[in-house]
Every structure is written in structure tokens, then in C-alpha cells.
Image 1 (tube, one colour):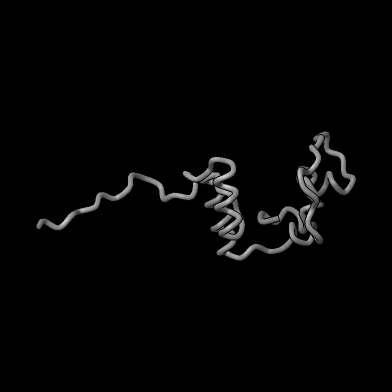
Image 2 (cartoon, rainbow, N blue to C red; image 1 turned 90 degrees about the vertical axis):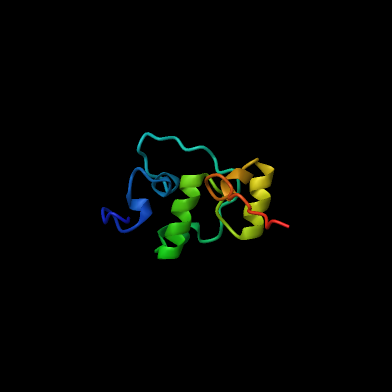
Length: 99
């Protein structure tokens, strides 16, 4: 959709919505592990804001869960993903004042 090749996700034959709505492209999808949210297709086709896009890119690059802060922390803890929530690189050294 972002590239302008289709107007809606279900029109692209290599997308999940195409397959879920009866399209056939030779790819067998696994069952969803949780029930789909109400209006899931509208959510898939919704335009993403710049802020949301940056969050998505960061989560994909870091392997972080995406969602509300409390859910992200509990999910990261449950699946041993705490490192994905920390800043990258070595922690800063603390300088102590001389007595």
C-alpha cells in the first residue's frame, strides 16, 4: 500500500488479508493464535502516522513487542525480551565526586 501498488491490503495477493478473505496464492497461512480484533481489516488498511511508523520500525529493528507500555513490559518479561527494551550500547560510566 505504501508503494502505491494497491489501495487496500486485501488486493495484494502476497498479503495475509488476501488469503484470509478467500484469495489463493499458494501460501498456506497458520491459524491465528488469538481471535482477530473487531474491524481487523479496517485496522490493517488504516493510514499510519509518522509517530506510529517510527515506533513500528524501532520495534521491528529491535525485536520489541509493540503496544501500551505496561503490556510491552510484561510481554518482554514473559518472553525474555528485556534486552530489547534497553538502550543500545554500553551503559554510561558514572563519575563519582572526590571527597
